[in-house]
Image (cartoon, rainbow, N blue to C red):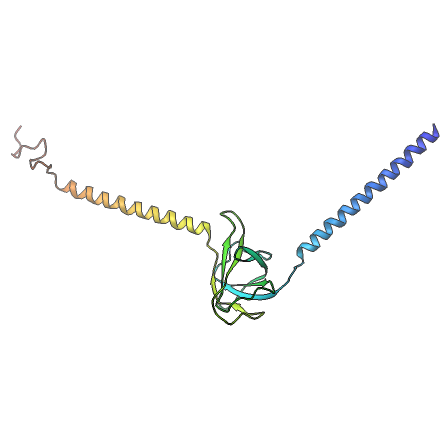
Length: 193
């Protein structure tokens, strides 16, 4: 009986040690994932661009050329003098962009994240590391587009209703029907029944 109890104790302590080892291993993997997420994996050279709006773009967003990811956004800040968003991103070392290239903030889908789409220019001179892309187009906000559309529709409907009301009021002022006779109930005379 005593040997059966001792076997259970040694087996449960072995299971406890194995469980603790698994928990330590999972904790280490979780810590590695969190630490690694904050670290930037830069390869390539840095370029800069200024945008009026970068809604939805964040550090780590893709930089794409012809739909292929060639880099990532590594920094975002606001220029205190121009109040524009300054975006710094990397471009793969084998991609050489002409100086008249454009950077456009585009979305993956209607509800998806944003990325920087590069459109190469035709200039013979190439951008150097640390250079700036001057041809830019900021993010287009779906909310802004919808509000503009709704405002436009309501404004058009309001103007149309006002025109109809003005035409109705003008026709109320001249109470002659289309047949040229006086309206019904008027005999044209005085107060005679």
